[in-house]
Image (cartoon, rainbow over all chains, first blue to last red; front, side, top):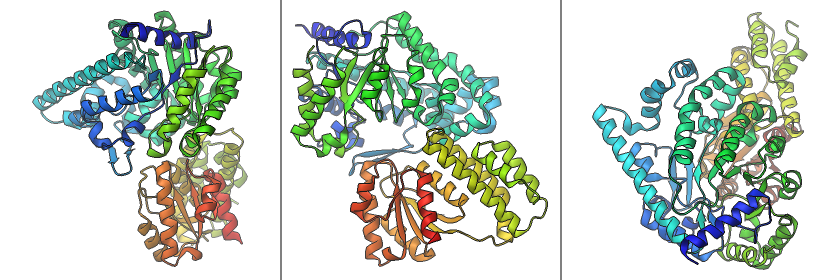
Amino acid sequence: MSEYQKALYTRTLFDDAIGMKKEPDRVPVMSNAFTWPIVISKYKLSEVLRDYDKLFEIWYGFARDYYHDSLFDFGWRNPMRIRDVLGISGDYVFNDEEGTINHIEKHCLEVDEYDEFIADPRRFMMEKFFPRRMTNLAGSRLNAKNTFVAGMNEFAALGQYIGKLAGAVAELGVLLAGGGYLTYFDIWIHNFRGLKGTLTDLRRIPDKVQAAWEKYAPMYEFAAYDLPFRYSPPPPIPPSIDIALPLIGSGLLSRVQFGRFVWPQIKQVADKATVDGKTIMIFAEGNVEHLYEYFLQLPKGVACIQFEKDDIRKAKAILGKHCCIIGGISLELLNSGTKEQCIEETKRLVDDLAPGGGYIFSEAAMMAFKTDGRPENVRAVTEYVRMNGKY
Amino acid sequence: MMINVEQLAKLVGDLEEEQAVQMAEAFVVQNPSKEEVEAVVAACQGGMETVGVRFGTGEYFIGDLIYSGELLARIMSILKPLMVANNTSKTGTIVLGTVKGDLHDIGKNIFRGMAEAAGFVVHDIGFDQPASAFVEKVREVKPDIVGMSALLTLALDGVRDTVKALKDAGVRDSVKLIAGGNPITPEFCKQTGIDAYGGNAANGIKTCLAWVKK
């Protein structure tokens, strides 16, 4: 098979699992590795995330040496070169000895600035948000222009790296996951008001928050959905799933808050994706069992949901006729269990979750630290699914 | 009584911030007695207990706990001048921090808010704190309890180091130890010699209250 045929075959595995019209040939395997392949390598985390040659070496090696069908992260989550150039790296604290990154919360919108934002969001973004969030844009117009150009060049360099990696791993039959799309709630937490600020605003000034998001939405929808998924040509190598939609903070919300502040946006993007023939992977952090009633309103066959702390068998029982389920093997077992124990658990997961289709195997949580799995165990479970997860 | 304490407790428990704040503001301008101030603080504690119970039953979520901490801090800032002036009695003293290697402080801050609401004096030493900082603070303020918070699995080493440093400094037996955060489990606490597993903030406070009431 050519590189492109191999890529199409893998894409078909994911499409069949998500589309739920037929069982795929076998259970697809999605990687949940983030910084883990880097922190178990010979390199420093802070060094690799700033060096595309080393990133390529790590992620190509990971695709070659393990048996995932798709990589979810492959260096896009922490694009340090772009952050450095724009001046948004100050909230990252690296510990290369331990292999960790801590993030420090940064607010770019004060609570008394909502009215100003709502009155003219574009102006607020240009005059206040960007200089606060991207500190290298502050200062003279010339400095801002030079920083902007340097930032665009770094975006292009990231794009080149991703294109090169996508082509190389496609020869192995491995695909990269598609572009990211965030909820306004998570954008607010990470960029505008911080976690505590956002959660408090939802209680104290919910109408203002909603008004601000309504004003922000057209800008974001164009940049994060329409431009990449409607107006750009499709990538030469197809992604495993088209749109990656992380739900980072939603598990903290009550079902009523989620229903008012987050769900309408997800429903809207799912409806758009259905029209556009795109697939969505919802990456749900924490426990989201209280939100299943909403997930049942997703258009059937357009989304898959990665669970982290939910009972995945229960999730499959409740949601399984409606959307595809991703997840399964615990990091604790991958780190402290024997190879045999890991394979036994994987067999149980596949036996319970694969029948009828609509299941993608994965590590149950983001693999970020050295202790999130032993390489031989991760290799054994992914190999098991590839060899035995056949329908 | 110049204030309906049952109603205040209900408002706090229901997270009705504006009405609860209005009641507190109306109360403090009436020159209340020490006993009346203590009854109002107790009402807030009762409201926070309701928050803890509702979190335990799944009615409230973590976002509600974080918000309840903000609500309570606002009411306490209104009552604080009276509490200082009246020398309102304290429940106990806690030294609290996120251990070395971990810069997360939201869980710690929820716990702090609830502990202060329960009447504890909390010495919060911040996040990414080495074991020596815990030891130093324990020597300085001689607390009843030391609380350690960790979110990253790797920060479990920081918790172990802190327990060891407290033992090495000879102050371990003068305090009760409690730990909380995502990677902390009852088994880990048992293995590490920590007296109690925090679970969620509300449960942790219950444990601390039980210790100081003995």
